Image: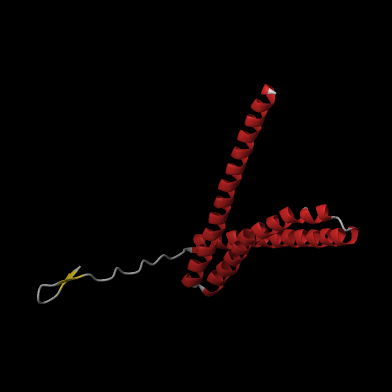
Length: 151
């Protein structure tokens, strides 16, 4: 807060904080970028394999005229779509962190960290959903076990 000549108080904007990375920080970012690069490339390869399985399974469903084979595609498509987003976020982090290191650009670092946050947020939501599914499955098994004892 500042005081003007006529006694009015004005609120001055806070100075933007500036964070600088030392050589160790850049080294850690460079190493993290290498690992996320590997994981994102590996993830895209897995997504490609899933896509090939979907295509071949779809062709099998068409040639054999069996709808049950086509129904088996639904989980594969769901897995492929769900797997794409965290891998894409990792790839964007990799790309932007390389740009940060090469150009010493803090805006690229901000964007890179935004995508890393999205990756972990997506993974956390998926973990919570997975835990809930397991809980529902366990409760379902316990209830069905109890009911089967009464009949």
